[in-house]
Length: 269
Ligand code: IPT
Image 1 (cartoon, rainbow, N blue to C red):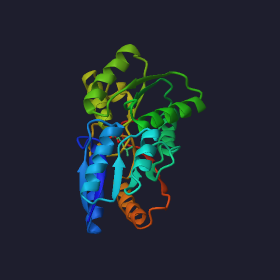
Image 2 (cartoon, rainbow, N blue to C red):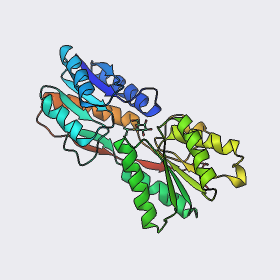
Image 3 (cartoon, rainbow, N blue to C red):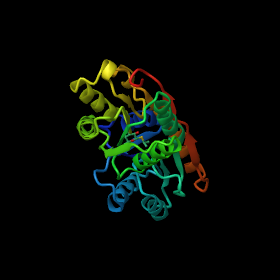
């Protein structure tokens, strides 16, 4: 038997680590994983993927794509014969999900920078089309507001290192006083660190940088990256376990939240 995985681009580190974990835990349960990686994230294209799963006798799907609530709800109601478990949706959406709690990690990250004395922030968010990117941004802003900081400039990247590199130049050219850049994922943070090195903003002139994900490489960035850890292995394990439970008892309602936490390394000071 097989389960389906509909995923964000596997060229990105986080979705690929999640897919790897799902694949290995599914294997431990003698389940194959059929992977779909849609280019378009709209109803027609996702429904087409579920139809392909159905044709292969697949009755459970893990969906790791940032989805708007209405779209996730529509997929569930139009496909009652396929158990869907969502990994990247808003907490307000009433569908089965396992997701990371952005609040603890985002709050800890901004508070850490504030405690170091930073008051001029650059926020490098993920794409506005991603629900998780929007939630991270709003919880950074809430934490800054709580600390009484109003000096934060926001720019948006596309999760890639290349976008991080471009956006760092944009931020520092327009707002040279920025002393800390809060970044929505490690890959963009890698690009930011590279831009800072090119601008000779290192050593005693360094801008503090935080990432998000704690992917396997982040410890080896220069400097090693302070970041918010999401345990992708755990997410994959729980997703497989919970999907199996739901396929056995489709009426159960799954709402699981996994913690995130700050890991302090040398990119903040
Ligand atoms: C989220 C990652 O944090 C981000 O780096 C990017 O890869 C994104 O996925 C792609 O959609 S993790 C997700 C489970 C919210």
